Image (cartoon, rainbow over all chains, first blue to last red):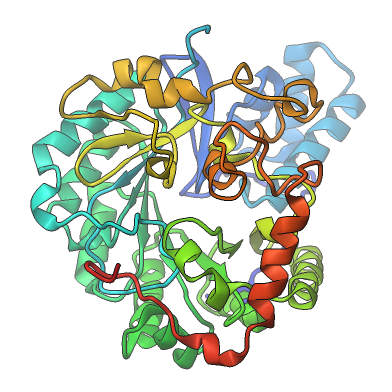
Length: 99
Length: 365
């Protein structure tokens, strides 16, 4: 498929976000930190970003991610929803998350 | 000075041999011959030391790295350590089966250089007949092997009018990313500066094209843009800061903070065959020379951008200001900033008769 036929991923609650095959979330023992490896770039997700990214398995829906994070952080779902959707859309636009 | 944090990335120039002869090659003017290259065991040992040091990405470059018959072995060693491997290739000499073999060995990503968006420009810049079709075939083989692809287009006066075409080509080839990389004038590019320097109007036009394309292709294609130094307001943070996150190793094992560091005559380099990589990273005099901000002169030393651009490029400071510790003349605060604009103006005013490149090859200088 040519990239010309690609579409921008628009994150919705029923999306099932995952990492593309060439993006890896990996623990780096020297620094004791999680790293996200992508073409020509390494990122160091903070704790919340990591908690979202590790749930991006291509199977779990955004709604399920929101509800599980709301539980874990004991936070209202509507607050978590905005944060998660905003985060995932930015990452999708950088082609680090697909859905 | 406090001990540096671990490096993130390493560029390994496996060889200086290359089928192309691009006149802006980042290799030194004095190219290393095949008999000086590190052997397979040396590279694999160095990559294991790199992984121990906390390096997460290795860029396999050259010359043309696929001229090494041991590339699969090297990729496999990186993969075993979880290091993200990136093959930087000209793509004119790889059979599809080899790309599949590299994928199977654990290769993570391919960066393919493109000299032109048309056969005519590709052949003129690389000085190789048929190069364009070979590159397209390589791109297709990379995608067929389900490897992610980046196109890297070094930009100069002979292809700056093709920026839109490069974007279109990237989409057609189903690549993830495009790098529109304005040529940086060190090494071979400095030798060919007059022939390569683009005009101001063309530079401004390409900025507009890239910005519009980024907007139009949001979430579809990533476009990285390396700004043209000679027309910049602020210098680039060269290598993300001298010996801060990344470094490179030449085919004979010399560890350098950047491609052009050998042009700074007072620096002393270590070799990975003589010292462990960790010791080189922490203590090599060449790495220490401009690490951090302590070496800076004014106004860099008290500049609020000192940890944004790290004073720019040391090699350019030496080449133009005559002092490697001076501020990069690409900075608008430099008293030599106008000189850079003047050099650019003079170069691009030269007529089309200045098409005669000094092509990159052994013995050309």
